[in-house]
Image 1 (tube, rainbow, N blue to C red):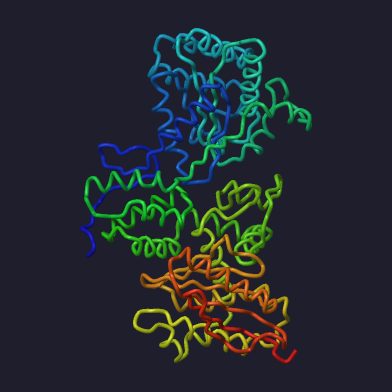
Image 2 (cartoon, rainbow, N blue to C red; image 1 turned 60 degrees about the vertical axis):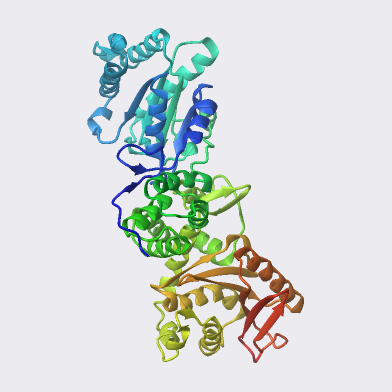
Length: 534
């Protein structure tokens, strides 16, 4: 039975508050940031994509620090270009911002910023004010600069970053008082930021040597801001304590993580829909909600598809990863990789670059499926009288779907060359499948099994899972291996039945479909033997 609808809010970070915003407890992450970065006096950049919980994390971090530090939290968003028109306007604007923050936290020290700066000694006077404050205050001083991407690309801003860099070095070399820690926040990648910083005294061309000298202004920020299942459970546990739904908290957290890999916005959006639509808190509801979410429009998907449309190399790169199983080692400076990392579409695991999560993978696949579906011939079978047999008694008739796909391939792609089939077969099948399950089901491509020779797809339809392996035929030995691999994967999905779709192009390939019974598992294999006349 569906639950009564509850108009409660789900946010992505922080403990629950009296307004009943259910949030993931990230106290462990905050503790790591304080102990590994702020207490040692590091300057660093929290650079993550949009809607990655970055702003809320920073808000919670400031709250945690306020008792032991004086915290200046600045944002240049919305201040207007006038502040950046010249050095005096910029530093005078900063002085006023600092004055306001001190009035709130430490009124005694506002005296260092009360007098307007002298135009002829603007940055020097501001520098001295920082030294006086940091050298006198009983509390260390921390500077946050949020939304760094919104700062106009003017020299005065980057000269200020150079000033911070100079103060950092003087603190290390001479003990000159300055900020305990400086935290930048934004989407901008740390390497892009550092390449634009220059010392306060340099106003002309920046050489590679100068760039390398500036690299110590910021250390890489390596805190994983994704939510592990045990962290997602903290939010579900708070909700369960209030409403006693009887949910299996860890099972639901693990299912959400299966799709999202802990992407904060996605975690929050899934929980929010289950709550607001009054769905039962179970695995089926998570699957249904993900299906709806993948099909919806939001800023994340808008940014993804905009980048796929505007940058053909990035589109090819993403397609090859998702549909062709391209294994990509991380290479600093590769434009497509850096673009995907900055937007959190990609992530680095070990030494490899992979797509961030299954939701992004599915959305990328759907983007290319939509292009394939513009070809009229693909609709011919899914719109025919055979359609009524694709779904029987509320379940997918996978055998019949694979049989009809085989017929479709032989009729429409009989004369295609082998390279084309091997490259396009998976996309063609997903494009064939999507109209059948559309509105009632979803699918996920398994990254751990995806490569040029094979790819496992899990289809979720009306509360049931169907495990399908797509593979390119490379002889009997490889086929036996594929069956063994599929059985091993079926064990992880806790199901006894699987499907194997093999693409074969030569006369020695098998032409007949078969049912394989092995180790208590049943596998139905359909062989698409195109180019039979070779």
